[in-house]
Image (cartoon, rainbow, N blue to C red; front, side, top):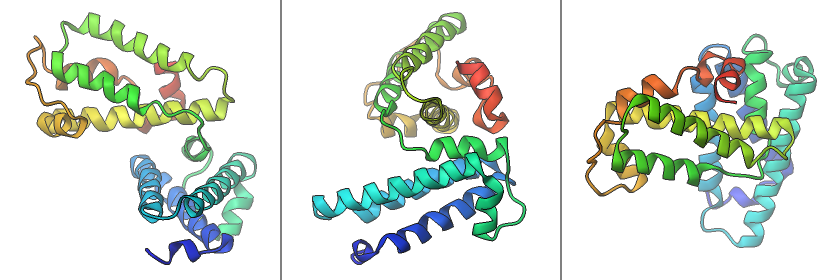
Amino acid sequence: MSESFELGTQELRHMVEDHWRSLIRLAGVNPQMAGEEVFRFEALIEQMAAGRPPSAVTNFRDTLKALRAEYAERELTNPDELRQSLQITGGGHGAATAWLANLETPASVDLKDQQDAFFRDLLANGIPDPKRFQLRWEQFIAHLQSQIDHLPKPEQDGIMTRVVLRNAEYMALAKSDREALKARLGVSSPSLGPAPIANMVVETAVRATIWQGIGALFRGFR
């Protein structure tokens, strides 16, 4: 990727256009894969930025951030025009892609560290009982929401969507390979709590996920 920073704005625009073609097509078939495409694209950005001079990295990130915001706004305000310009027929539309536009909107707050800390505590200490966990979970989500209430709603929605996407990812991993999740989050101590994380968290925390629609998501968590 050594030549990546030689790319001009037009080449970076082509990157974002290809990204949005994938988002729209995947959203019409498998919303989960569409969400994963966002994180795949962001991982690619990080790969391209790694080891480059700070000034070049800053310009690269700022250009891509502006382009992603532009295309997110086009999706929200004139999706038909966007599809025409991308030469796409079919794919996701309306609510199926509006949440992806929110996810693509640049966020000024990242709640990942707090979410990781919440899961580390669950993995290390277990959960006493479903009712106490449910209360704790609701308080945690309310605390996260309180930190972003001052932001524009599209940005709030994008940030909370990331929380739920990450939550679903962590719970799926906890259910299939708890030790892998512990390793990923840096939990080295044995879990001595009275209840395992997997089934209880899945059953009590995820009543509505992103895959069931953005409306259900925010009714369930906000």
